[in-house]
Image 1 (spheres, one colour):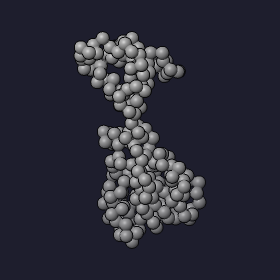
Image 2: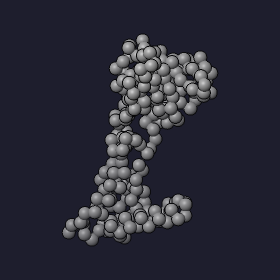
Image 3: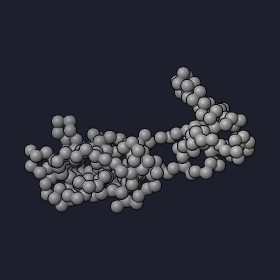
Image 4: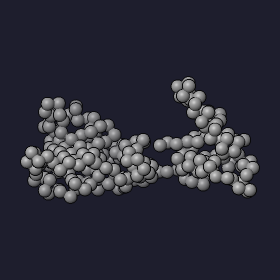
Length: 226
């Protein structure tokens, strides 16, 4: 339905030092930051690098430089982040790497990158639902983090959808589930439309329509109980 989109890491390096010494400088700077409660501004000896460049710097520090580069890089232009051989990762690439490596991301939630598009579609963020009166027709969307179909629920399915503001809940009746079975059980991100219900401080949307959203290629996961 929507077009697919493409840990901030850093390593510091002193201009006159080799890579191994540069990493020592970064550690010293990090220690100083912890003692002072965090950096107050740009450090004169530590420069920020994007993730790929950080890995490049670590690899360069870990391996022998070889005869060609054993004296270091005298040309300071070679040391600027903009001149490194690896391009910065796109938001999509960071999401794929984060979820692939740890199952979560330390950066923005995937839905945060699509919030403007969601607003254009009339989708409400999870945090907004508390201010909307019961009975109003709404749209919610997010990554599926839980699917439940209790044996005592007479075929009803309960979904938990997560966005960057919180978690929203959807109730799917048996007939709606049967019409959308594959979408409900297989898709990572969903948009659900229906009437808002509020009972005993529990907010949910009784689904009437739902569709899959192509938010990211990252492999997110959910806890499913059938």
